[in-house]
Length: 323
Image 1 (cartoon, rainbow, N blue to C red):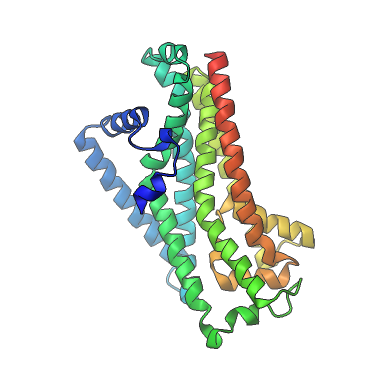
Image 2 (cartoon, rainbow, N blue to C red; image 1 turned 90 degrees about the vertical axis):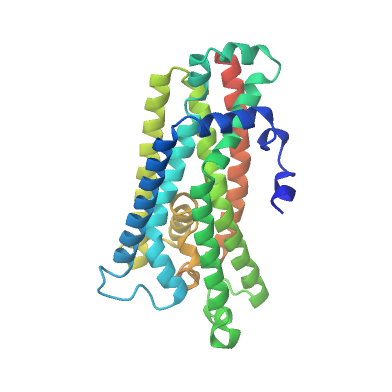
């Protein structure tokens, strides 16, 4: 099945491509074994720390149950750890591509690559593709958590003799038929799986654009730091605003509430909060047309993928022009 999926990828994104194979082998062999073991130990410790912290936050520091349903409990425990992991994924995706040209120039290979017809393009595209392979562990964690939450949603739908979805769409604006609601819910679940992939690809593409515009390492690193700070501020602001809105501390118009929740899901937590059907169903009831947020996220993920491809192409043109 994996081979069938990878067979649909462009040649430069497959592991049998010489440049991609070289990039992955160079990255794997860069650190000594001892350093790799120490790094793995730190990752395990960080994972345990995040899991423990998430449980403490989800239970109000052991003062209450994490939630009323299985899905709500799971989400309350994993939300903050996953938010940290997702920010880490964004930062690493940017960092793995942000010094592409500076590294090739330091190895004195960039001019030779540019002299070939598609040398520079292949280096940039394979570096972008290598991000997905090098961060596959973190990406797998992000996706596995989402798959588990989707399983929880499917289990929740069996409540009330299978009429749970019918009950939560009662009285929402606009009134939709049950099959339409099920389809829109499926769109949301699909978007929640696509958003981590497209968001990581977008950040990796931004790293390539930074590398092509700021070809000196000092300026490239500074631009990456500013971008990461900007992303953290945006995520923090969206999480804060969405939390205040849900708690009733922030008043917004219907359009403003819809845009806030959509922006929070698209740029903040990549649709993670919507994988609690109880929470998502509440937004359907309180925000007009909230049931269409899942469809909007799916469209956004597809647009983000198209924009990512455009940014990679722009980075290639800039690299060839400025190199």
